[in-house]
Image (tube, rainbow, N blue to C red):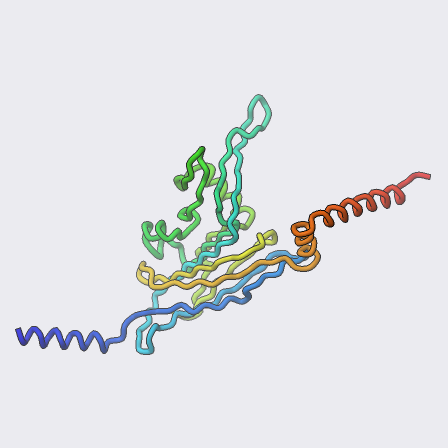
Length: 258
């Protein structure tokens, strides 16, 4: 018994002296505020990150993977399915998506399927096919199966517009512990707050995660007109009507026939 106790004490001391593996993610975004003007054609943001040990003597690995999810302001959208009825295209079915991200980008250094298991990807919503998109189906609210026609076509339309992206080359490791994430924003990006959630994986397991945020705002005359329409509706309406009358009168003067 004494010998077993001595062995246990030695093993405990060895475990205490050996460097523990615990990592932290340190993130730095190129800008936390994107200004949208009349000449805005989109933006490419860059997120730099580094993996640092939790303690000075902690050991780091060299087989890390990164999955960064960028999510924009949420909105409720209605989709419609058209069909040809008696030679005329009409709406035959609709589906409402409840508070879904207006912008969604899943960026990684390699395919998510190669980073972690399908169960983990589903639980953490890693990928466009895994993210929850709540729909109103009659009186119920649910997220349907990934191959649901409404869901598939909704994601395809968002991808065509550049609002939804899944890029397995969106993360580049500059060194085994320093990485770069490219975040593309389209020209018609929705204004509001955006969250950036970064997950660090090693050997298929989640090691740690960190997050940051950015804001997309309108500036210049566009912001002034928007604020006037929202907070001074009467004055905005009167000015808009007067401008329309003036433009109509000016057009009649310029193009009148003598």
